[in-house]
Length: 67
Image 1 (cartoon, rainbow, N blue to C red):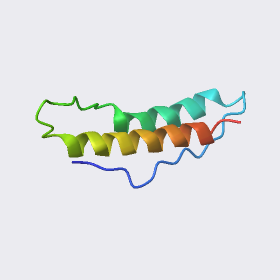
Image 2 (image 1 turned 90 degrees about the vertical axis):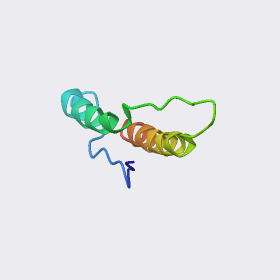
Image 3 (image 1 turned 135 degrees about the horizontal axis):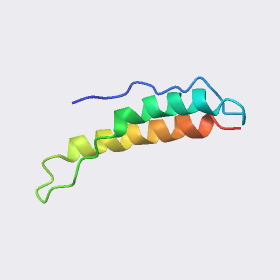
């Protein structure tokens, strides 16, 4: 199982640097591409919780990198 300690996008999009910003966001999103599916017996609850935490970190990083 994997976990993100911190997700940082070091570029703030300002309307002129979209290619660089998009590259950083794409890189951050690669971490959360795998989306676990809830199973009936909840045997993968930890994987889902980890994914939700990591997804939130990436979302926050994206929001904080936009003016």
